[in-house]
Image (cartoon, rainbow, N blue to C red; front, side, top):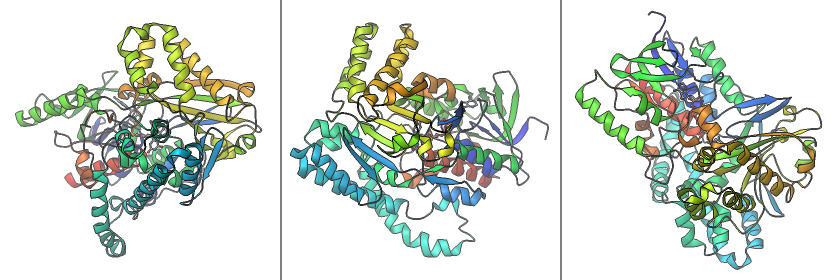
Amino acid sequence: MTDNKYNTIIVGGGIAGLTAAAYLSGGGRKTLLIEKNSECGGLVNSFSRDGFVFDAGVRALEDAGIIRPMLTELGISLKIVKSPVTIGIGNNILNIENLGSLDRYGDLLKKIYPASSGEIDELIRVIRRVMKDMDVLYGVENPVFKDLKHDREFLFKKLLPWLPKFLFTVGRINRMNQPVEGYLEKIISDPSLRDIISQHFFRNTPVFFALSYFSLYLDYFYPAGGVGKLAEALVSKISERGGEIRLETLITSVRAGEKTLVDKAGEEYIYDTLIWAADLKAFYRLTDTEGLSPGIRTRFSLAREKMLQRRGGDSVFTLFMQVDEPPETFRKVANGHFFYTPLKEGLGRTHREELDALLSGPGIHDRQQVLGWLDRFTTLNTYEISIPALKDPSLVPAGKTGLIISFLTEFDLFRAVQNDGWYEEFVREVENRVIKVISGSVYPWLKETIITRFSFTPLSIENRIASSEGAITGWSFRDPVPVVNRIQVADRSVVTPIPGVYQAGQWAYSPAGVPMSILTGKLAADKVLKRK
Ligand SMILES: Cc1cc2nc3c(=O)[nH]c(=O)nc-3n(C[C@H](O)[C@H](O)[C@H](O)COP(=O)(O)OP(=O)(O)OC[C@H]3O[C@@H](n4cnc5c(N)ncnc54)[C@H](O)[C@@H]3O)c2cc1C
């Protein structure tokens, strides 16, 4: 093969593309992974500034019966540490330790919302049932990562006895596919309580996915050195197996009829099979199907129409801070992965109707009106606070702490503010308010001890990862998702209308996150190998 000809090319060096490349490298195959940035990992990434290590994307990992089996199968040993979770509302702080913590969570809610005591019992009962279903779902290592031909013990003793339970559970999960907000309305009458439970989920998150979070809190773990170590380990595996990685290479066109990719500099790469492990809207925009059969071209344009009409899901605003205070001061309050809501009122109409009205009306051009809304939004919101040093003390200079504070937010808001010419100022205003709210509640010393701070907005995510609308887990749940969303047919999620071209990652299956991105990466790699 000439230099630019490959058996398989994978576009996108996020966790999905890295997984696919790790499985496809070696075995005499010529494999190339192409990534637009100067390092791989995408939304699984850690970076260092002045001796502080921060996680830029996901803050901790959930195994979900996927990550550990994948690491074992690839022969990767990753040093991991615990990532215990704390939930807090106002002064009520609860460390999540085990299944028993669910009852204590119920007690905490009852203390704050005594009038809803009976409804809270019902909520806890539903969450417990969802957790049982999660135990079934993730009860065996995902068979996609097992060698079923040779591992007979796994097949007969674990997988086959588990399958009927799995199918039964999947049926129940599919019946819990409606948006969490509507579901909660049926069982909880206090709108504030409903908000407190659901406001840190994406809009219209399927109820099963939302209420399974308690299981995920117990499942979280953290790679020593930062979440990005997972991506680094896969990069090393790809190189060890002889796979090629090309960084700082943005693919700008796919000539599917000629099986050719073109990058921003005009360089061409020829593939036999292709895995697109980046934003799917980009794939459908960049792909030219000339030269393919009329049937394929028709199917492709129908799929394109469907994809391009849909939006990426909610994005996130993240404030990173270097703080002159030792991690122990923070540990006295909560663990290093902390979901905190300062006030019990809940966001109410603030982040839904009020924001929609602001974005669609003239108010968006009135800075005072936008800042007034921002005051309410930041005061009433729920924050995900991550402190890497509380998981791995080596991630900060002695006596100091790195803090990552984030909340879900709208891409369109930041775009509108940018169009109005005050983006930088607005970002500062957001930072100031977050610091005020957190200093005024859970970490009173924070404001006075910040050494430096900076933030990533939905626009930064769009720029850096090339993710439509700055989405952090693929498609929005506000419209029907244009991809596979049922686990029993996850296998189909990686197929595109073009033979030999597959898709993987958070845009290929919904709902997604790190485990599903890894799973689709592996499924796509399997399809490539089967095809051969
Ligand atoms: C703050 C935050 C919290 C999160 N929390 C969780 C959580 O708790 N649990 C969970 O499971 N998930 C969570 N996620 C989501 C999870 O991180 C992502 O869903 C997952 O990492 C997506 O992986 P991916 O490989 O599909 O995509 P990406 O990480 O987006 O990777 C795509 C890669 O493709 C590259 N690329 C794009 N276009 C091109 C092109 N044209 N040419 C070349 N390269 C290109 C990009 O630079 C990027 O590296 C979170 C994410 C964030 C940001």
